[in-house]
Length: 155
Image (cartoon, rainbow, N blue to C red; front, side):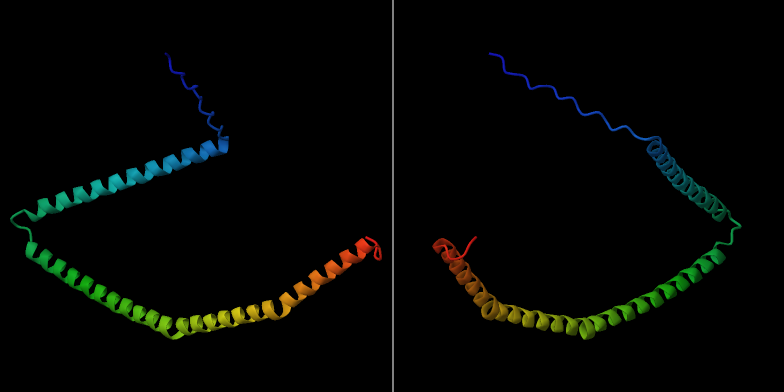
């Protein structure tokens, strides 16, 4: 007994691209290739520069102690800059915490009070105004229909 074969569904044809879209796609591909090529070239340049530096530092007459001293000074200055940046970051964080505690929290509390007041007002209006008006409207509609059925009022 042969099982029925599901019908082969052909995928819908791809939408045709306009020449502008094709040109834009080619431009994006070109930019991506440029970026990849630039990154590879930069990495290769750094590796070559590192190799040349190592070659010259391994020479017996190289003043490596002076170069080491310069790098120690640079690292010390960099750590000083990072320390100042950390102090600025901590001051900004303290300012943000102060803002949240002293300004945002009271605003949220006032908003919460306002919402509660509105909730009470809506409940009051619903019970004291809307319900009686709905009842009166229902009674008037019933009276109007009764008068129509009795023939006193025309439709």
